[in-house]
Image (cartoon, each protein chain N blue to C red):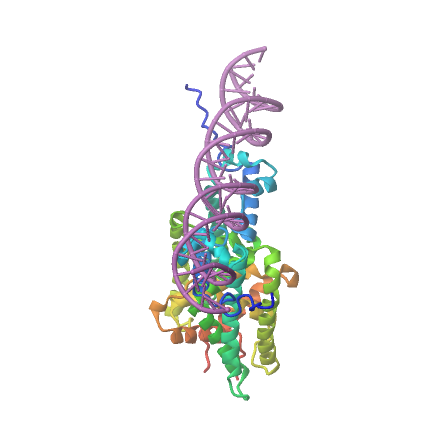
Length: 209
Length: 209
DNA sequence: TTAGCTGTCAAACGGTAGTTAGGCAAGGCG
DNA sequence: CGCCTTGCCTAACTACCGTTTGACAGCTAA
């Protein structure tokens, strides 16, 4: 009785290789076929195990979905915060927003299966499954709102559009890049440069003369 | 034998009321729950008939999806062309693009069930079901490419980003507005003004002094 | 060696999905 | 009147899905 080894301390918690494999393949299949259209048998096949074995690692299909969505948004949040918060204290809000855009794009495009699954599926899952993610998403939205409102207070942001509209438009546009970005057409850094330029200054030429 | 009346000339073709109702409810359900997660029994219920009766109007669930997607994209295409082509011959490309943006947004937001279903689902349907739509989508993309390339040739469009990137970014951003636009927060016309301003001139302030 | 745990499998179960078959009421038309 | 078409319904069929159960090989520790 006293020999209680923590019931699965290091192995059964999260870092099993097949467990990760299942998550990865699930994200890929969710992304391309949708959540409901993806069968656990397909996921298992892709992960190299049998359908029933999935239940050794997950309690249900919905739990897999939950983890895939969590991972997708967390990757982006981490990438954004890391870049924004490593800027010098006297950075302009333009610089901070640029760092945020690069972080968001990096997260989106380097973990496309998780982030695209997020973008595509989130609007279609039952309210119960959304509950937990709603908080995280709200916090991320607030983070951007603070960036934009600070920029607005400093006079760096345009004043004839609501910051909520700006945030929704920009984040939505950035999210959708994962659906069409093609790394074969140019480097990631160049892509970020183009997108940032469009977001900051628009698609038209401006007579600065 | 010779009394062959065209087998369902005016009635059975497309304009049955219940048939339209099925399409409408299917679009709404596809939008909110996804294609695979939507049951024909749910669609039938919402349309006020029984599941089996759907097969009097449609050959399969996939045929319903096909018509929903068709309708979604056609609404937008028509709205855009109508607005762009009713401009005077000497309109600037800026004016034409603005008209296109308004048309696209109008189509997206006034038939949200059809257009959102399109945005959300298109990436998740089998290649076979995409075949027919691919052509239409390609033509629509070409239409915008011509707008942008003409604007570029006239020096109205920024030159440091590819026109393909500009089109994908702008159309993607416009498409996504249907997921967050809230008519309660302001008039459609004001919304169009804000979006167009952001797309044209970006989110930052510009010192014109 | 033996006991127990880990990770997997094969096989099944209940539920539900898309689809089909046959019937039935209403109405126009000869 | 009888007939045929239109539009819908009821009831079922088949397939497949998420999930559960019980067993089993391999390993570790005592």
